[in-house]
Structures are given as C-alpha cells and as structure tokens.
Amino acid sequence: MAEGGSGSTVPRRMLGRQLRRLRETAGVSVAEACRTIEVSTQTMWRLEGGQPVKLKDIYIRALCTLYGVSDYDTAALLGLVAETKRTGWWHSYGDAVPTHFDLYMGLEEAAKRLTMFQLTLLPGMVQTANYRRAMIWTVYPQMPTAEVERRVELVTKRQQRLNDSEFGLDVLLSESALHHEAGGPAVMAEQLAHLMEVGKRQNVSVRVIPQSVGSWIGLQAGHFILLEFPLHRETKWTEPPVVYVEGYTGALYLDRDNEIRQYRAAIAEIQRVALDESDTRDLVTRITREYAA
Image (cartoon, rainbow, N blue to C red; front, side, top):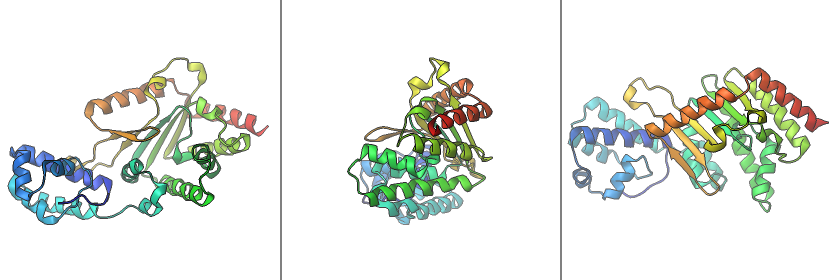
C-alpha cells in the first residue's frame, strides 16, 4: 500500500481514528494488523494517523474482518475510503497552497465554526484583496503579479464560506492588528471598513482586545485558530476539534484533549478582556477615520 495523494483531509482523519479505535477494542496488535494487509508498521501508523496513504477497499475489508466489525460499520468505513479520493477545490491552485496549508484547507472546508485569534494581522477570512496583496508582497517582493493574484483569488474563495448561515466565525483581534499599516493608510481604511461589514453578519462575531488591557493571556498564547466540526448522527464519527498554529515555515495541528482544553480556556480569558461587539465597532470606526483623514 504505497503512499498516495493528499485526498480529503477530514475523511482521512475519521477513517484513521476509527480504524485505530476498532483495532484497540479488538485487542489486535499493530504487528498483526500489518501482517493481515501486508504493509509496514510505518504505513499502518500513517493510516491510523490520518496521513496520506493509498487506500483500497480490500485492505479495509480485511481489517474489518480481523477486528470483528459489523457490516454497518464496514460499509461506513468504505464510504470514507471513497471520500478520501476526492480532491478539494483548492488543489487547482497548485503552489499557491503551501504543503502545510493543504491540510488546513481540508479542515477549514469541513468545519462548522472557526475561532480565529490574531495579535498582529487580520485573518484571511476577513481580509480585503488589497490587504492580502500588501501582505504577500511584504513576504515575497519579487513574486510575479499573476501568482499574487492567484493567492488573492484563493483567499477570496475561502471567504465564500461566510455565505453559509450554518457556518460560524468568531474573530478575536488585538488592537495592535488594527494599527499595523499593511499597504498604507488607504488600504487599512478600506480593510477596517470591510471588517465591520463582515461583522454585521449574523454568523460572524468580531471583537477587539484594546491596548489598555495591559498584560493578558493572548500575549503568551500567540495567534491560533480553533476549528470545530459538525456533529455526526453517530457520535463516535464526529471529528474532534483541532487547533491550528501557523509558523513562518510550517504549522502545528493540535488535537489532544488536554491541548484543546487549554486553548478553550485561553479563548474564554481572551473573550473576558475583549470589548463587546458594539464597543469594538466604535473603536474600529474611530481608527478607520484616522486612516481616512
């Protein structure tokens, strides 16, 4: 079973998590499972970890037989195999999607709610095209215009999720993010006006932590995104939350229970010191006028 394409992120993760649960419940060792479908321990680790591997129905059927899985659950697992072979719309953007971000895109597409916390920048889901261009050229000053526009188009398409009333977005911003002049005053005035327009949507919340707060937990937590997923009719199939932490050259995906609890506690504390939505609008409006002056 050789390594294959990236496929669809969430079905891969669901499939791997269920296979591991079923194996452990059946008391089957990793070595025995590997012998059954004739793969290496590393391949089994990747399969159960939701990593890209080339999947065939025959392997899943063999494992289900070994684990004593019901016909119903076997059919559900085979359905997930089919889902993993579908590619996401973002794959057509090629190099505009970094390798570490491909996994995030699959998670974002499946999520029902995002909680985005930023200290210094506006998150992609609320960026204007001009703000995005300014940020791209800051990091890649020699990038050809055509490639910049592909990246702008990518973030614009991501923002279409906001049109789904069942999708929720909570944006928590340090006031500092409103003062970094990406692209200059005119770009920032447009960006902050757009931020407030997005914040008027019923499924979007925008709140700012003012600089007057002083010391607060967000200064240590750093920027992150909490992704939460829809409940499945079978509770055991529901995808657990994930925290995405992007760095300069890569990213972390945190999903252990203790990690999620820690970030939820951080969100609660950040919300405690943040302005409410009305006071946030007043602050952002004032800063927008300063840029426009």
